Length: 313
Image (cartoon, rainbow, N blue to C red; front, side, top):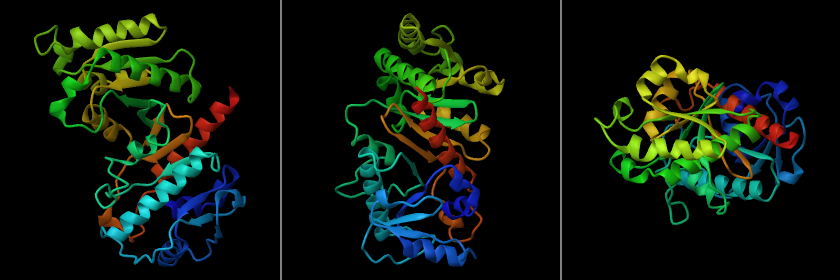
């Protein structure tokens, strides 16, 4: 995906790419995919990055045996080393934004990486900041009250305070990062038919609606709760600037259907800019040169757009 995105030289007009990887791996795929003319420069740190060039930082000295389509421990260690170095440089201002590619969450597990994903690890570098994962595809922007937890734990994890916090985060990022004045935010219910006036659950009346009213009193234009099926099924989502989902699959399932090219994940609320693709690693198509790079391209340009919006303030 990275090779395909950077093979279009026009992209260098927008940013200076710095790849945290290994030049040997880059050269291997470059040759396999018939992109021998795609040149790069190996640098020691991001401060040496050259404009209109592909810059690569060899993030590990470990000998990497390239085994496309297989999960290996050495690949997991290499992934973590790249993520650690890039996140540290991001925190220290050596790079302006970070776009992460998919990882294998299993082979990265170690004493240093015991997280459910990259976002949880990145958050440890910014312990004073609350964040919310925002899935973005055009004008569709979905955030989550709860994310990577079992479905049975969702009702107990939801609280008025947490919903209010997430609404504040979404509202702030829509204003600051997406340059939207007075954004409208839709809040989804937890139960079928948004509880149906208590017939199918009390969370809407006891937790979600009171949280929405508090948010409104703070100047946040929050609406709902809406039943998720009709909200997405009849296109109501298009009338709002942001959506707050109660749990992972409630928001991610319709997002997968609507975001035909994959969409982008944006870690909102941090003092730095980090985006990523929303799709997985795709071992089944590894080394076949058929991966669609559009999600990676959109992740890069969303990061650029957010940076520009922040600097305008």
